Length: 347
Image (cartoon, rainbow, N blue to C red; front, side, top):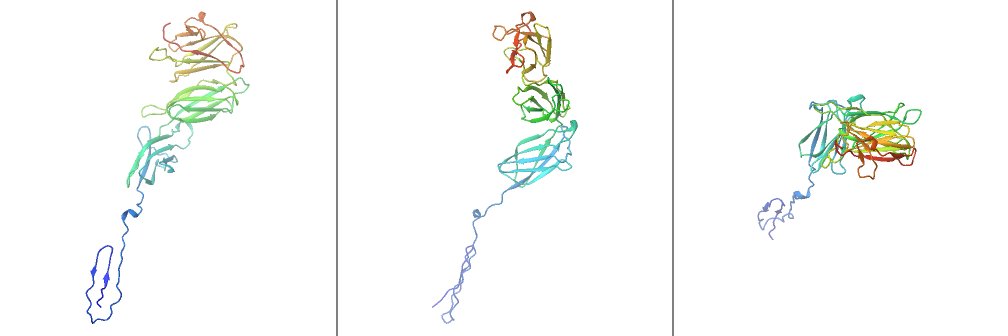
């Protein structure tokens, strides 16, 4: 009987072997050659990656050779990498997966004096496959804020923690007062900061606001020396001064305004300058003996207003003779609050 020798391939058909003559010896069994090719979809593709190169710059746009700055690259969870800049102020992240958004944060190394630079964060960074994404991060010299705390104790309030919070950037910093009651912050981004200090657990906090500016390409960083702040377990009299609605009732500029309280019996006078900040609400806090006090404010344009009672039709008057005193109890559980909002530069 005739037999066939068959060679099969899954890639290409080789064909049929020649027909053997009847008189030939028995042929060997059919030989089958199989060459399998796995579909491309079944092979896991390598994750596409790129690189991210970070370079630090000064506010002027020139290269900042700052070694030791911590750079963090964060993408879709759980991707997060940290590295430090070299002597040229640069570094490169390799094998960064594509297909997600990244952000880069830079935290400068701590340095002494006014040369400390601000932390910076960039967002919405895209990485391209097989390419290098360049990220230039401007690291300006930050502003500084320093001041001194005073209190009713024989010695300065040392060892108290002053905390500041940036109302726009969310920057949070803390400083502990030294033996003279002084505190100091540096490397602060441009912001309006709310400062808080508590004299003792459960005490009423002392709160104030202060503008601080980091350097720009054309302006140096601000070095703010804040006015002394009185800290106490409670405040007997707190005067809140509000800038009026600039649309409905334009009012005087309160930056640098001075609050004055006068004891109606002894004639003793205490004053406190308001912070020169962009905040529309400013606070003056007083520790005073029990008694009755008239409360007034003089704006930067030398317009004077006096409190005339919280529940009267005209809460502010322009004459000290018309002022209505407020009663204050020293050491009360809660301070007595007076609210002033000058409405215009004319009575």
